[in-house]
Structure formats: C-alpha cells, structure tokens
Length: 293
Ligand SMILES: Nc1ncnc2c1ncn2[C@@H]1O[C@H](COP(=O)(O)OP(=O)(O)O)[C@@H](O)[C@H]1O
Ligand SMILES: [Mg+2]
Image (cartoon, rainbow, N blue to C red; front, side, top):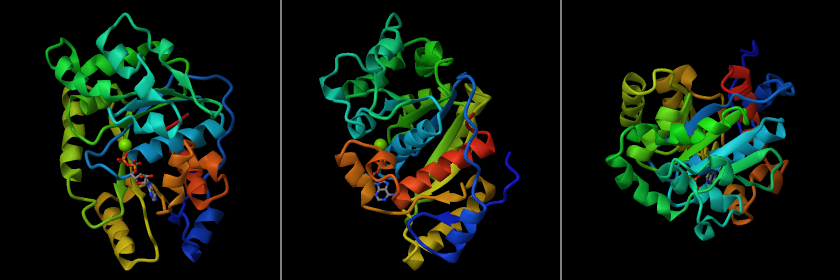
C-alpha cells in the first residue's frame, strides 16, 4: 500500500476537495520489469447501464498506458466492450463463446489487438447468450472461464472481465475465475438497490467455488457534483461501504458515449478530459492498493 491518504477526487467537478485530492494523488506506477501472472478482476453489477463496460474499457486503457499488459474479456452477449473498441464481433466466428464451448480451442487464437498498445480483447457476440443454457449440464460448469483463461495467465498483468447485467451462470463463471471484483455503482437514487444481492452472490461464490475472491472496491460512476442528489447518494454509498469505496469517483460526461461512438477509450479520444484523468487516477489507485501489479 501507498502511504498517501487521498481525499475524494471528483472528476469533472472543479472543487477545493478535488484540488486537495490532486495534491495527494497516487503515485505514477513504476514500470514493470517482467509481466504476469495476471490478476483477474470481474466488473460486476446485475444492473445495466451503471458503467461496467465503460470502466472495463477505460480502466484497461489507462493501465495499458502505465505499461501494464491488459486483456479485456467481453463477457456480455451484447458485445459492448468489443464494439466500443471497434472490434466487429458480430462478424467473427471465433469469440469467447467458441472457447467456452470447445476446450480444444486455444483462447490465444481468439484474442484481438486493439488500437491501444498493450490492450487486447477477447470478443463476444450474441452467440454467448446460448452459453448459459449449454453450460448448465456440463461438469465444472462454473469453471469454464477459468479453464479458458489458464493458458494466458503469464502473458498479462491484469485481465478485466466485463460481465453482463445478470447474476446467472456466466457471471458466476467470471466470479469463479476472478481474484477480485469491482462493482460500478451509478450515483443515482436506486444505486444501492440490488447491491445486497450482488454481495451475497460474491460471498456464495467465495464460500463454494473460489476462496481467494475479494471485493476490490465499489466505484461511484456518473457523478454530477452540481446536483445535491448526486452528492447525497455518494455520501450514502460512502457511509454504507466505507473504505471499500474507491476514492476516485467518475463524473458524468457525454464524452464517454462520444468515445464509444468513436470506438476508442476516452484516454485516447480525449486524453486530457476529466473523464480520462479520472480513469488514469483509478488505475493508479488500484496499483497503489496492490489490486494490480
Ligand atoms: N461517467 C459517465 N458519464 C456519462 N455517461 C456514461 C458514463 N459512464 C458510462 N456512460 C454511458 O452510459 C451508458 C451505459 O454505460 P455502460 O458502461 O455501457 O454500462 P453497463 O456496462 O453497466 O451496462 C453508455 O451509453 C455509456 O457510454
Ligand atoms: Mg456493459
């Protein structure tokens, strides 16, 4: 752990608190001499539209900027992470689905490079929606993703799994393969609804399938510091989860959907925008906390 004690930093919201946080920022991570073994982090929340995919793409890109080798696994049949990085997954025959279903398929043959150096992706498309039903009758059905990722563990420093908005078997597979979970929470009124169920699921997977699993943190997203509402929800989240809440908060900005349309991470689409700054800070926070090498 870094001995810096950062205060809250709110991206896109100039304030004295944010200025104070800048002064106590997390250190820029030292370059790595060697790579791997990877730490697997599942991006999880059964609610849709909370920033899972946006966080997967932009945290991944920020970690890659810091010289980490990053693999993103699109684990949502909607394929938003693939699309957001310009990978035409709907045209591909080989996706994460192929590797899950056929153990003779090496995931390395499916990995796609992205426009960001050091950032690779395992794509997904609608085929993945069949996996849940097909896996149900298989032996080791919860370990299918663990098996798929095994051959590449030494090639990457971090693997980010972009989960679909459900707590079904695919998400259980992600939690079984993972070392840690990040829970993005939209800073909105109903944000906390469902979180108890999610934490219960994480606890069950830890108990029954994956004792090493830990909750790395709760990430407040889409924060709008101009509204009292957003500030109140953030405060509530911090009261409820304490130190489990990342000190980095992601502000609400149209630049995120804009970057998706441009099929780029915000870190390259608008490198100095507050949104890019925030995800770089989150990357440094993860390294400082020891969640990423
Ligand atoms: N911080 C943000 N500010 C504004 N819009 C955002 C932000 N994060 C994500 N979005 C947008 O909100 C929508 C849902 O985000 P997404 O990351 O796809 O959520 P999820 O993967 O949890 O469903 C997308 O259109 C995305 O571009
Ligand atoms: Mg998504």
